[in-house]
Length: 270
Image (tube, rainbow, N blue to C red):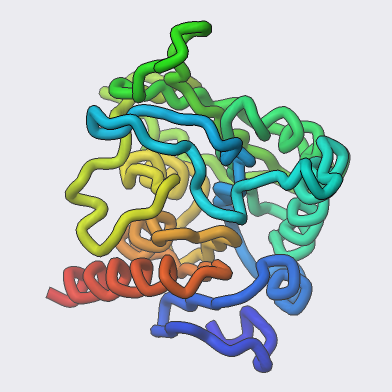
């Protein structure tokens, strides 16, 4: 994949089918070749880290993830700045996405409405609004609202009549027992078995990425994750014969991704 990104970007990890890049996603995306990837999955900061509490494994824990997930209102950060942040990275993703490619973005109520508006403002057309219903969400400890048990995943393409996104309708129908797959996907939170190489606070389950990648890409195509975290997107992409580019500014998370990708590569070679 040497020609897929500029040669002066150093790789944290590289194989024939995968590249991990440590750095600021904004800067890396600017330096990638225009229209070079077939699909993007992004799980951007939700800005949930507000010093609150939640329940995890039966224990009360802080909701704070890290500085990347915190909107610093004490230093003048605002809703407008959050929206500006979303518009900027989505604009850069549009630049590297092929005309017939598509982008998937996950989020909660804390950020997804800004994401949806940003997509339209930056020249995307939303194809589907997927609701991921979690079968085992943490309870609501405050008992002052309904339990938060869903996330939204927006699927979009460039808003151009010449652009035509790929959808593997038949595979999705087969995965759904011979019936059309609906836009509500039900399943559990990430299994512990998928966290053996290390934990990430917002790690997505592999079955979620399987549907996303298999529905909107073909074998050999390139999948980009600009906030790749612990690498679930890459794990699924390589498992199903796609190529992968992952970007993250945290070396600790990239180390987890590296170990997970190496495991998939070894399994594929058996």
